[in-house]
Each structure stands twice: as C-alpha cells, then as structure tokens.
Image (cartoon, rainbow, N blue to C red; front, side):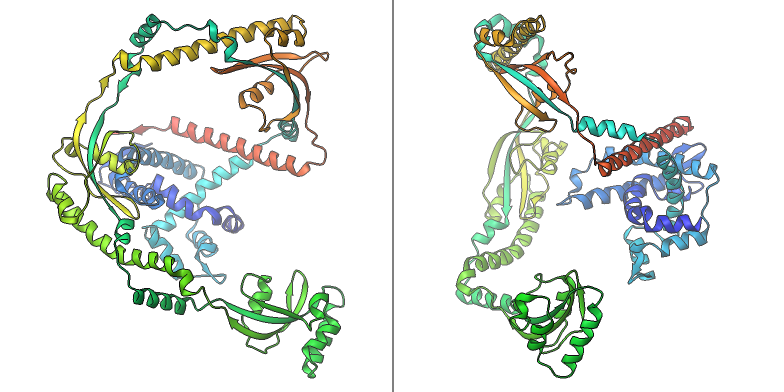
Amino acid sequence: MLQDIRNNAQSTIAKIIIVLLVIGLSMFGVDAIIGGFAGEPEVATVNGQDITEREFTRTVQMQRQRQLAQMENPDPSLLNEDQIRQNVLEGLIQQSVLTQDAHAQGLSLSSQDVDQLITTMPQFQVDGQFSRERFASAVRNLGMGVAEFREALRTQFLVNQIRGGIVSSAIVNEQTAQDILRIQSQSRTFDTLRIPASTVAEQVEVTEDDIEDYYDENKANFLQPERVDVAYLTLSLDDLANDVEITEEELRDYYEQQRDQAGGEEQRRASHILIESGDDAQEKLAEVQQELEDGEDFAEVAKTYSADVASAEQGGDLGYAGKGVYDNAFENALFDMEEGQISEPVETQFGYHIIKLTDIRKTEGPAFEERRDELRQQLAREKAGRRFSELRTQLADISYSEPSLEVPAEDLGLEIQTREGVTREGGEAPFNHQGLVRQLFSEDVLAGDFNTEVIDVNNDTAVVAHVREHHEQEQLELQAVSDQIREQLRAQQISEALAERSEALVARLQDGEEPAAVAEDIGAEWASHESVPRNARDVEYDVLNAAFSMPRPADEKATYDWVSGAQRAVIISLQRVEDGDIEGKETEIQALTNFLVNQRGQREYGAYAETLRNSAEIERP
C-alpha cells in the first residue's frame, strides 16, 4: 500500500490533487465525503446515506466561487444559479455512489498512509521538504479544515484506485492501432466535375403562392423577438484620461521616477575559457586553474586552452550582454560574480567554462522625448483611475435612488445614449455583456420603474441602463419577410435541381458513359486531384469528406458520387486509394495504442460508474 502511495504521490495524484480538490470537491462536495450530520435536513439519500442540506449549500457556494474565479471580470449576474445547483446535486449523488463502492470493496487508507501521502506531495514542499505552513495555507485557500482535507484526500484516493484499476486493465490490439494509423495517413486520387448553379437557375421559379404557402406553414419562424429600447450612460476610463491635464513638470517628474525605478538594463562583460567535455576535461581544467592561480594572464591562458576559437583570439572576451543571452548555468554564475572575479568551472551543454567578469555597465533607457506620448497616456490613466472609482461609486448611488438617468447624467456630466431593439441575446457593445442584458430583462427594470445596477462591462468601462420601451414578441407580416422567403425557396429549389442533375449524371457514368462526354454535355471540365491526404486544405471540405467516404475502386474502375449545395454541385470520380506507409512509425503506433487503451478504459469506467448509479436507491425529498 505504501509503495502505491509513493508512486501515486509522485505521478498522477501529485499532478491532479489540487484540481481534484478545487474542481472535483467543489462539484461533488466535501461533506458528502466525510459523512452527513445527524439531524440535518437532507436534499437526497443514496442507499440510505443522506446528502445534507448543509453540505449541498456549501458545495454550491464553492462551485459559484470557482466559476467566478475563472471569469476575466467576475460578475455574479452571469452565473446560472439553477444549473449550478442541479450540477452540484448530481455530482454529490455520483460521489456518494462511488465512495460507497470503494468502502464496499474493502479499500481503506490509514491515518499514517494519509500523512505519508500528504508529506510527499510536491505542492506542500519547500526545497524538497514538507512545509506545514504551505500545507496549512493551501488547505485554507480551499476553504477547508485540515481534518476535512484529510478525509477528502483519503476517499478521493480510494475512488481513484478503482478508476485506475479499471482504466489500466483495458486491452487494445496493436493491430487496431496499426490499421487506424494506416487509414489516417491514407491518400486518394480523384477527379471532380463542378456543376455551377447557373446551369439549373433557369429551371427555378418561385411564385407568390409558393411564398404565401411557406409563410403560412412556418409562421413560427417569422417572429420578431422580444426586445427593448434602451437609454444608457457610459463611464469610461479612457474618456476621463483624455480630459486630464498633465503639466510639463509632472511629465518630467514621472519620467525620472520611472527611470529611477527601472534603473536601466544591467549588462556584464565576460571573458571565458571553454574546455570541451571529454576524458581529459578534468585534467585540462586543473592545468588552467593552476596557471591562473600562479598569476598567469587570463587572456593568454584563454588563447592557449580555450576551445572557443573565436573568443580565444580575443583573450576569451565575449563582450557585453544582458540577461537571457547565455546558457542558464553560465548566466547565473556570471551575474553572481563581483567585477574582476574568476569563477569555478561552470558546466553547460558546450562543456566547462571558467569565467572572468571584466566590467559591469547599465544601459540608459529611452530619452524623455521618445517616451513623452507614452508617459502622458500612462500618467493620465493613473490620475483618471482614481477619478473613475469615485465617479463609479457616485453613479451607482444616484442611479439606484433615481427612477431615470436624467439626474445622474446631469450630476456627473455624462451623455445619455440610446439603443433600440436589444434582445435577450444581446447585441453590439456594451450590450454584448450578458450580465447587463440579464439586468435589462429583469422584472423591475423591464417595467421601466428602475435603472439597472452599474455593470462593469470591462475593466475600464461601467454602464447603467434604463428601459425606455418594452416590445413583446410579435408575428412579422408576410410583406416584411417575403423577400427573405423568396431567396430561401430559390436556394432550396436550386439545390434540389443540382441534386437531380448530379444524380442523373452519376447514373450515366455508372452505366459506362465516358467522363469526357458527360463533362462536354454540361460545358465543364474534370479537375484532377493526385494523392490527396485527409487533411488537405486545397479541396472543399464536403468534397474531401465525400471522397474519403467512397468505396475503393474495384478492377481499376472508378467509383462515383456527388455532393451539392445552393451554389454548386460536384461530381467525384474516385480513381484509386493509397494506404499510408507505417513502416518505421513504431513510436506513433505505440502512442496511438496508449491513447486507445486509455480511451477504452475511460469508457469502461464510465459504464461501471453508470451501472453503480443506476442500481443505487436514490431518494429526493
């Protein structure tokens, strides 16, 4: 058991433990793992074991926090609370089923085993040693106590033992992987005959009766969606920044402040002696170090011993360089040295280096005039940022207490803007923000009695809106949509005509008529496509998909098929199929085999978990 713990702690468990506890436990619940609390109301019972309202509520809160943390601009109004609650309950039920199964199979983990597992997890280590402080901090960040974490870890480990056993027991024949790889790398040679829509366009006629009949049969497709006409105020950091006045003195002070903080890039001038790796490398290093200790000039020693011929001619001089230029080991040694110091041998992929730091300098940043516009924009945004926060607070207060936008607009000097026809699907910015749209269609705001809350549609823009007029969903008149229906019916009839033409031409080809004669009949020419792979980009997707779905030609006779749409049809003449060569692709075959094994194992585990779920006695109050 302990060996399994060590293996898992260094591999799968170590990599996924935090994800499991943040995502898995937020979905499935902590309290579901450590057991219910007697006497509490339950939201479900699984095989006689309660899922309490307390653990359900707490897990919903954890899931909400997780989703908010994933948002670039966290907005609680964007959360689908009903969906969260449903997902959490289903997750708690599933976790309870799996936990009970693990216990039923006699799997257990002692307290000592749990301690061993925790202390070997890299997430809780500092410099290779277990850190109680890091462990405690990580557990607190999960919103859990240590005892809860230990129980959660214990059960999650046991459940994963079953999962791992089922997944790893899956078997896939290597021949299957070879066949799939051969098919994946297959190429096909085919000809295509393109039939443009113009060849059948004259056959198409859409009458007024056709339009009216279609309208009557599909009225539900011609509804004007529910929409609102909106007035809104926008508070923009960029607009505030444009109005900020920056004096020359402020700008120069800001430049000096930034220059002092940045301090310029430090560059170091180094010389080195390179000894290439080999059987006699240590002996040569000893000779070099001895000569340097005896007072020999570094440049002369470099000319004699250094394997870096280019720099050796210059006494080992490499010139000035900042960070990010040299190998990491070389750079770390160089930037830890004092001027004039000579290093101990430093090993890199090129061999062993003895480094001498000959000079240190700092480069000057861009001149003031070069940065004037950039600095003005930065300083203006800094000043505007403080003003933005103040005005946003005022906007929220005033718009909450006022029934319209006139007062906040006048008090804060903002312009009332309008937008018509905003639907529940949103629209152009700022109404592409679902939180704002959801507010617009809330009961109080929709009635026109209240403004929305102030919504941060991005980091630099806040919006408050008011519904001026609410339009219910309504049926569009035939006259308003007749042109749309005409085009739709015309496209449909053209597609049908192209399909009929293609089917007839393919029948002629299958009956043995010469392809050239068929092409001549429609005034078109065949195009050849030699050895086309599955992922070809120069062939239309539907044509490529059809070509790779056609049966292999037999007895050197082409097979035929066709695809069509509203604009054209294409007849395909498949000439030959060339299977991919998998010789020498053992690595790809093994990787594909592993993938197939894992895929099958996951399916088998999914079926196993579903069987447990279906056979469980689940009661919901």
